[in-house]
Length: 177
Image (cartoon, rainbow, N blue to C red; front, top):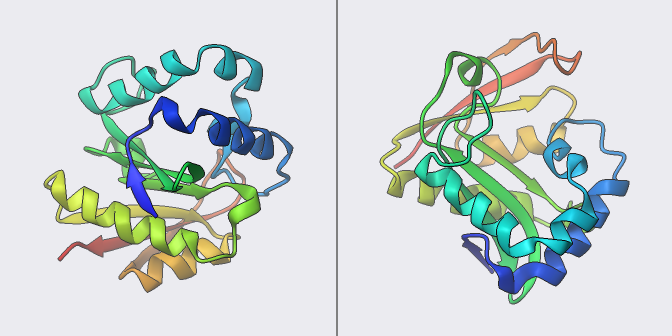
């Protein structure tokens, strides 16, 4: 199992995962970006999709209001297990909700320890990008994410309202050693 940059070799598994996200009734915001994608469009232009994902690290092709971020995929052999992003800096909005790191495990692979693994690995990558302290936020209802963040050294700073979701968010800081 490893954390890799998006690549065309994972197309079949990624498309399977994307279909899972489309049918997932998860109550949190974590996989919303994948739920908004068209499976057919991504499948038809997968190479372009991957190139765009990779370009974000260089600050290219970013949607309005986004900051440069490194997109990473957790894979085991050729199986896509989940995704993570490391935002290279914070905006005022990301300082409140979003933070430096976002991650998610595909629905069929949740509750198997992959969440803890992806965060552990992404923290190593964040350190390689020069970050020594990172902010993570989580929906207050996502108990699993809270446990994963705390297991990886997350210290709760506070709980704040999140008007976009209608539920409070928890804000954690992790010192990277």
